[in-house]
Length: 399
Image: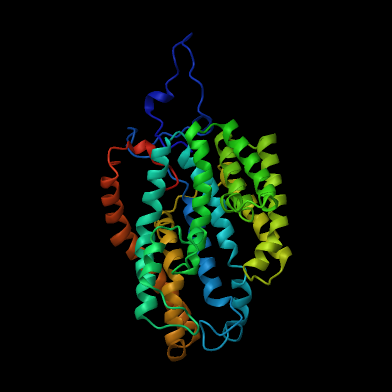
């Protein structure tokens, strides 16, 4: 979706014989003019893809339930979640799929964010989006680990470990994450690194499509190459989800499915189903492969509807807030929530503890967004000297 408003004069036909500009595939498919009741053109930005904000929050909440309820042991409950929540436990076991959905959405959004940007603009946007909240989460998680209740067998967090985690490079450095959920951030960074090649030469339909084909092929060859760097950068297990999201953005720009994008999506789906058993085994998800495959296939269908603009009408006012709190919710729910559950669930009871901790995690995420992310992002933007960016340089689906 174009991030610019269609101005009133854009809708006036050109004089006869005047040269016609090349149509923008995103604007020609849906030309929107915002008008007041009196007919005047209203200032503002084009509507964002609010449905992606809803999906981000849904994915984050599914991961929250997975970490709170899917374990077969007693942590974070003194009794097992199977015993306390027999039905919800079976549903929560599939909550890890929220991570796969996050990666697919990221492929879509990052391709949108990098289109028409310089490499410097692209990375400034990524740093401003990821790091302010991440730094706050690392400090909170470290403080909770050192000062708060500790679960059995939990290792002590050192100051050096916390400082290394602030770089977001702890995985390749071989340092344990302060919070286990941070592993996905390194996977995201690998995507940004290799997609930077496309941004560097300039994103076009052909270049992005070639990128998808080459990444798919590279993800197949990397494990057998014996080159650890390739395996780290190309992320064979998770590459199909990013590739699918990127291809769906190409569909969005074209306004329709084309043969090549269908081919990329088909290949990504086939690679995904091949990698799925290894993902489930590696992450300890001993659940039904067919159900997981059906759920991920449903994600493909949903992203297809978004790519075709079928869900653009979803513009509820609360959805941008949902999108804003999804990232901090993902970052802090485990390091803080698991400790509260372990310490107080016997006194409070199972359901009051679960509902209270989820509500507390959502509130904490909102406070981090308002009190930490906003001011720290403004400060970091000034330090990076990007305060002069034009509004139209920001994407229509968020930062």
